Each structure stands twice: as C-alpha cells, then as structure tokens.
Image (cartoon, rainbow, N blue to C red):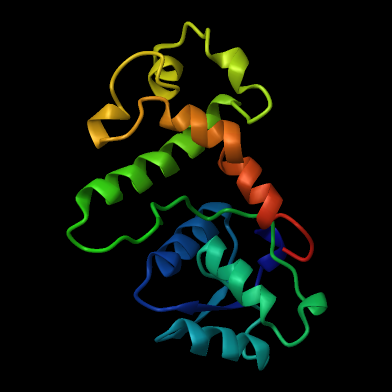
Length: 177
C-alpha cells in the first residue's frame, strides 16, 4: 500500500470496498484521495481516462475489469488484499437444497486449501486424526447426507477438480491476471 502514498484512487461509493480501502490505508498510514463514483462502469471508465492513479473493487471484479482494459499491459493488479468478504455463487430463489450444495461445496474447496489438501494428496488425509478434516472428507459426520448428497462430496470435489487454490491457479492466476 505504501506505493499508493498520495495517490488518487477511484472507488465505487457506498460499498464495503470504499470502507475497506479507508480502513487499510489509515492502518498503513498512507494518505490518498478517494475519487468516488456511483457504479462500477463509471469507476473503471474514470480510471482509464486518467481521473485517478488507481482503482479498487473486489478481486474478482479487478480480474474481470483488467481483462477488458484497452491496454492491459500498461496496468497491474497489486498483490494486496484489503479484505476477505463472503462473495459467492447465486442460485435460483426457493431452491434451498441446491443453494446448500453449492455453498457447502465452495466452503469445502476453501477449507481444503486452508488444510493443504489438494487433488494430489487428498488420499493421505483420509486417515487424518483431525476431527475437522474427518468431517470435511466425509470420514465422520453427515455433512453431505444432511444436504441430500453423498457424504464424501468434498472428497470427490477436491479429488476431481482440486481445492479452491488449485482451481484459481488453473483458471485465474495465469498472465495477465
């Protein structure tokens, strides 16, 4: 964040991104000038037109906006995380079982990454003594059956497509992202 000392930063007003930016810059002792806009397209347009030195939004938004910048080679996404927020998939209203399956699968992919469980080493974790790992992989508990699917759903997901980090690295961590 120190590289942004004195910078003007475009940000969408009324968002948690605006608040997180203010909190993190203050905590780092970095002064900056927020340049606020009502919506994401206006924020990015202002950045591209040079009305600010940088812009910020959720990391997924940065990646998608970066891909459509006129000259992406002239820009970079800083390796700074201002916050971790519960962004997630959207499912049809009223389909609670599907929502639970999608939500718990996402949580399981993230937990797998946090535990260091990958598609390559997952079988080694099947004999883990950690209660949380046992529940995650379906060795104990009824997390899967409670949502109407196989109890080893997290094992199957991680084994077949990898943990959250593996999926991210495969699809989003390639140049220029």
